[in-house]
Image 1 (cartoon, helix red, strand yellow):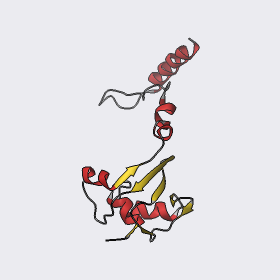
Image 2: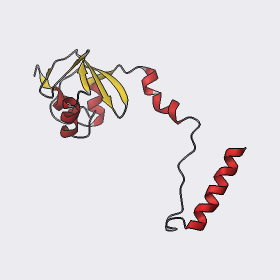
Image 3: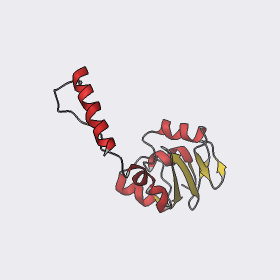
Image 4: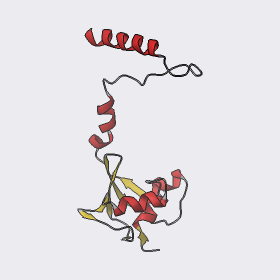
Length: 130
């Protein structure tokens, strides 16, 4: 096997959950080889560097092995080298620092009533003042 379709490879190495999502990413210009955007039918070879824009992050991978069937995660990792810069990998952590955790209610208590909502708003306002 000397060449594989890029959409098939991205799905096989588990960069995208499904082949359809992988194909759509290529069609919407979120996958590139160097500076060039590629179509889903682009034939990929070993040694090429792929740029993938996914969920607002820019990932970079170097192809080390070609596969066309989906494999387990431990095998998939051996098929590429992650060249994504450290700053890009830490982008989510940087964004999340200083943010409060999501609010949670006990299971079974249902939605807050109007009275509960007012109490929450007053409580939050007191925290912002301090």
